[in-house]
Amino acid sequence: MNFVTLTLFLVYQVHALSFPENFKFGFATASYQIEGGWNASGKGPNIWDWYTHTYPTRIADLTNGDVACDSYHKIATDVQLLKNIKADFYRFSISWARIFPNGQPNNINPDGVRYYNELINLLLSNNIKPIVTMYHWDLPLGLHQLGGWPNIALVDYFVDYADKLFSLFGDRVKTWITFNEPSQICEFGYSRGFLAPGYTQLGIGNYMCGRTLLIAHAKAYRLYEKKYKQHQKGLVGMTVHAVWFEPAAEGKTYAEAADISLQFMFGWWEHPIYKGDYPPVMRKQINYLSAQQNFTKSRLPYFTKDEIKLIKGTADFLGLNYYTSFLCSPLDSSAVQNPLLSPDSNVTCYQPSSWQSTASSWMKVTPWGFRKILNWIKKEYGNPKVLVTENGYSDTGELQDCNRVNFLNDYLTELLNAIKKDGCNVQGYAAWSLLDNFEWGSGYMQKFGLHYVNFSDPNRARTPKMSAYVLRNIIKTKKIDTTFTPQGFKACPPS
Ligand code: NOJ
Image (cartoon, rainbow, N blue to C red; front, top):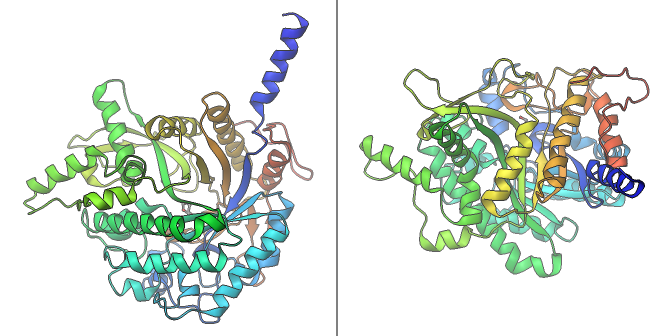
């Protein structure tokens, strides 16, 4: 190699190893998981307040989010943490029942507006962009009593709520996420019953809920486009949880099983948005099974032509939550179905026990799947603008959190490869989560935070873990340095 080639090679190597200049890093949370203040100053009850108070044994450690991290009283502390770790943005969610206590749009709670105004203003004065999720699972109880998401009437309620948020905060909030993880809202809330409201209308509630969410998302998007976009100049999208599904073996049937899984979990939402209507394989399989089961019509409700048109094209970016991967095979009678997917998918997926585990039973460490899902999205939907809205690791709360440090280094390396080597259009990355918090049915037993929260301290003191310093260094240098050891911590063994 002569001098010029060597220099070019080295420049290329350095470039390949660093995140693009305009790439943004941030941290994510959700209202019910961190805020507390469950009945403070005019807030109404939501389905998680009701669910945890009515069925305490459905939460592994019998806890709830009544106080959680008490972020309702800790705006200044949380923004300071974000500033210390050099966040470009903060993704948080708005508690609908803090704005409209019973979900009805005629009764607004001034303290809710005050709370989010203060948070947004303090973020901006510290140069941290707010990214707002409008719905992260905490439906006002009043709307649940009207039937919740399977009731199509919730479309109008959501649009009224979205309208209010755009008009109250849209002068300062420029990135909006309508729904967080619609698959989990519908599949787990209304079909499997793992999450509030805990209903088990298998193969029915999920699809009714899904139809409402897609139409509500699209109408909120169209409303913004028509009434706000020109002067507020913001972006609206949805966040979907993707698992990477890998064929369990060679051969066409395995490849098909993996693809069907991706379509049932991810395509359910993104196909209507990017291509129009449900993925053909979902339509075909659910229609077939519905007929076999003696239903008079398909359990997957049809969109009208106008609804298909309404939904198609309603994303300024694709919000992606990625944590883990599974191996998939066609279903045979002896196999257990993947609990993440509707049984209508007719596939079985599992995670080999040799894969590194986490504190969450559904999640093993699979950084390689990150690059694969990003490439699949690129190919399937024409390389859309992607914002990684969540990615993170669960443990039991160690401050020297080497597993999380290795997780971040390894997942971010795959993300970097997807951007630099494969040309995937990823614009930003949010770590889940800023804080240890209420992990739904697992209570406080699974910790995802880059900051430890002392839940037995009434003050809910926060302490940065080793991973917070490591991510801070990545944000500062735009590079991954697997040898970086922050002061006061021991070097981690390699992953
Ligand atoms: C996705 C959800 O959006 C979030 O609320 C949850 O805590 C994380 N995954 C970890 O399970």
